[in-house]
Length: 117
Image 1 (cartoon, rainbow, N blue to C red):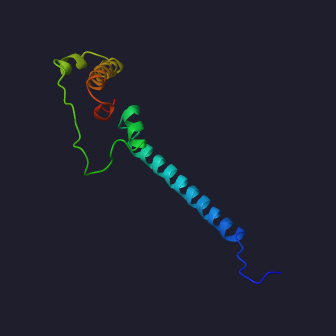
Image 2 (image 1 turned 90 degrees about the horizontal axis):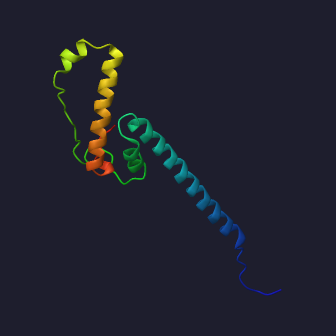
Image 3 (image 1 turned 120 degrees about the vertical axis):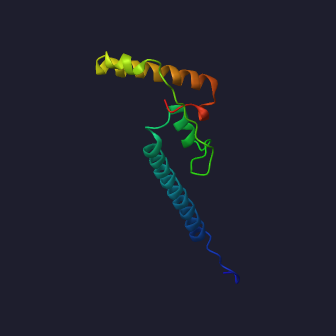
């Protein structure tokens, strides 16, 4: 038997590996929760490409970021036209208008600047 230092390496190494695994698991769970929260908050308001940018953290989310962009449109003769149509026909007309507006805005802008769709 030698007289000297005895240094057990297995226990500290195992504790270190468990700590790393625990940290990785905690980070993954927090990230999943954050993605779920962002989806719940923005899913009905932004297009799928914009949602992907938000989830991939390429588009900042918050009150102090870029200014929002809104489009206001006046459909000529809409009131008179809508009074003579069935409600389903008015909805179909508006959906076509919104679809075309979204196509134009997304074709001319980066996904982060695209309309909500």
